[in-house]
Length: 346
Image (tube, rainbow, N blue to C red; front, top):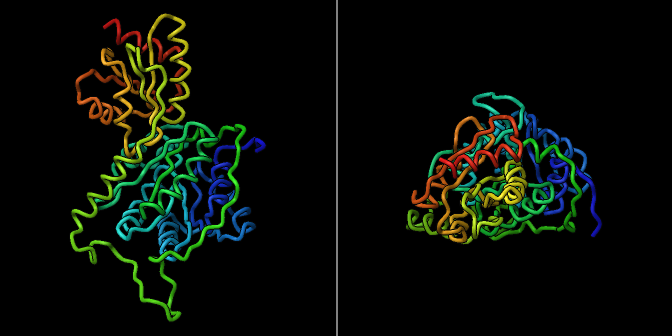
């Protein structure tokens, strides 16, 4: 299949169409506005429905309705806009409906700013809405992965009847890279759980599963335990003999991958664990790491450490876990190498 040069946001949007998405309802906010802009022209041309909602709240509830009717539905946002989606995501999860959400992260707290960052790790991995739910959260590190993972997100959303998330960032969303796009799919919305209106068929309802599942606590625990066991994804780079292992996702992981090679040339045994799913966090990846590793170094574009908590849990706090915070500025590879060297020399 031929490659096509595409911007990250555009490639993700095109992949969603080709994955069989038939409804998008969303609202513009930098740095994800190119997703609805692209879909406003290309989704109707592919036979789907695009709605620019009056707000993020309206958009997520439109997604709720489309998902309830069995359609592959998606919305995208960033920062404070993603915060506004949380109630709707919680309701969609409680009704066990498949939907895909995209968060192109931006910097800061509250309104924040439009700079690239990785500030939404907690809301993506812990769930920002009410109740007992989780979302598989994919963190692409390239434009090609944005394409591949949005297709996987739609499939997994339907498999588990649960919302899934693409946790992108402004750098991945804005860069241009060659990609291979998937072949277009046509997806049948006539699921046995989907509502169809009063057309003489069986009565169906969409509401919280806790109202009609007998042992809801056991059911919901088993569902998310199955996700946690089955859906961990990661990439490991030279961890078998590493003295220090970096842990990074998204744009940070690209810098860290280069840092590993630079460090090796300088005689420092550096490795990298790159989570592809930030939930479920790839705990299994750490079994591959050198048992004599001296320490871990998480690298995040944020003002406070977030992923470090998950690394500490994954290694059961048996090995020191340090952090490097870039804030809104992407660090150089050599800066990361120097930070790793400091761990060895301390």
